[in-house]
Structures are given as structure tokens and as C-alpha cells.
Length: 85
Image (cartoon, one colour):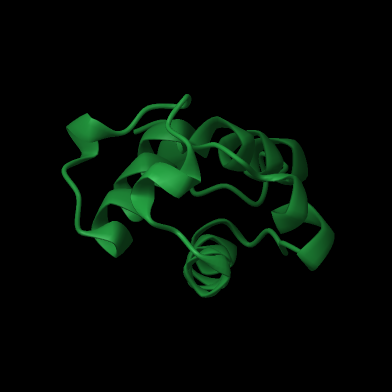
């Protein structure tokens, strides 16, 4: 499973949506994601990938793809679970 797939799965789980409804172009606003939802998602992704997501990171995130980019650019291969590398 790729990093993108894992992030999409996590978002789908947290937002109670089928993963098939999500892709990189999905705006977070379409998921009814408010600031508290983003914090919840950030904490879950920090735990999954070992990548700290700061307030400034979340301010730039508008789409699922933006979130994937932030995680992928901050994560090093050593931090990613084996099945994601």
C-alpha cells in the first residue's frame, strides 16, 4: 500500500466515507472538514507516519493532495512503515 493509499484510507475512516469517493483533488471542505477535524486528522497521520504536522503545515492544506504532499515531503524512508516504502 502506498503512502497516498494509506492517507486516503485514514481520511475515509475518520470522515466515514468510502475511499472510492476520495482522490488527491478532493477539497477538504467537501469532506465537511473544519479546523478540529484537521487537527484530529493531523494527529492520526502523525501517529501513522511519525511526521509532526505543525499549525503552519495545516494552514496551507486545501485538498487531500496537499495533505499527501506535506506528509510525503516531511517523511523520510526510514520513518515510513516498510509496506509503504
